[in-house]
Length: 70
Image (tube, rainbow, N blue to C red; front, side, top):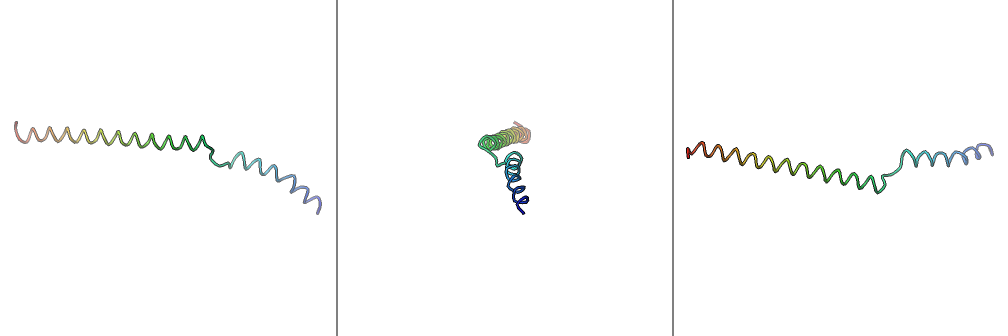
C-alpha cells in the first residue's frame, strides 16, 4: 500500500508536466495571434466585397450606357 502511494506521489509531477507541455491553455501570444488572423480575414473580406461592389457598379454603368445608346 505504501509503495502504491509512493508511486502515485512520484507520478503526479510527471502527469502535471506532460499536461502543461501538451495540453496547455492558449497564452497571450496565441490569443493575440488568433485575433490578428481574425481581423486580417475580415479585412480581406471587406476588400473583396469592395472590389465586387465596384465591379458591379462599373458593369452596370457599361450596360446602362449601351442600353440607352448615348
